[in-house]
Amino acid sequence: MPRRGYCDRSREVGGWPVVSVALVLLAVAQLGCVVALWAGSGAASASRWPLTLLGLGLAYDSAVFGLGSALGEGAALHALSVGRYVGHAVLTPLLLVWAVERVLGLRRRWAWTLAVALMGWGVLRDVVALRLVPRAFADTLRYVPAAPHGPPWPVLVVIAVLLAAAIVLWRREKRPALLIAAVILVAASAAAFDLPPLGNAGEAVLFAAVVSVERAGVGRGRRAGRGLERHPRAGV
Image 1 (cartoon, helix red, strand yellow):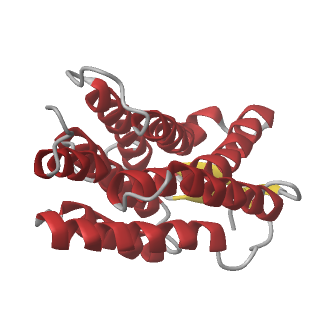
Image 2 (spheres, helix red, strand yellow; image 1 turned 180 degrees about the horizontal axis):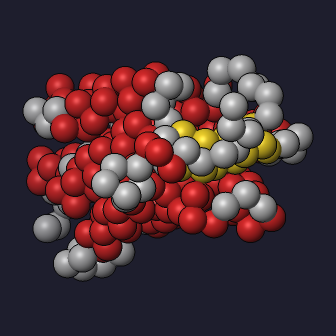
């Protein structure tokens, strides 16, 4: 029986670590989405900065996962893996900030208050007592928590808010892309218990949809613009 953390090279296809390469390419695609977020965007909007940090965190996560077998077990991969879990805890709630402010049109203060609370919850739950052990999947190698912490409640809250925002966007502006991507993420996250790379793939699909929505300028900004058209200021 192979030792814990052993990377099964027999699962490489044609001598290539297919899953590892796919994850690295996924990281490149996520970086491409970050670039697309700003390309030809004109003036920077406040909502793009949280998405930029989120996209960089997602790309980092996929890259570390994909490069794990090349780095091998040891302090380097362990330290990089700690960064993955810190990123999940701190950056995932930024998606909630975007959904609440940009799509639902609520005050930025409330969005950040809830996001910071979820960040603190995630750090206390997943980072403070984090102990990682090496684990292999196909041709990949990564570090995972030694003991499960139960349902990821902070992430589930973010997904619930995102689904609500996606439904609102679909009903209000007839744009189903975000809702479809959110459903794909939920399905991929469930399947990731047995096929971990699917979690990264689902996150990539969702982030691409979020970027497309942001670039389209839908949400609160457009509603505000229509409101000004309907109720012009006196003297204009």
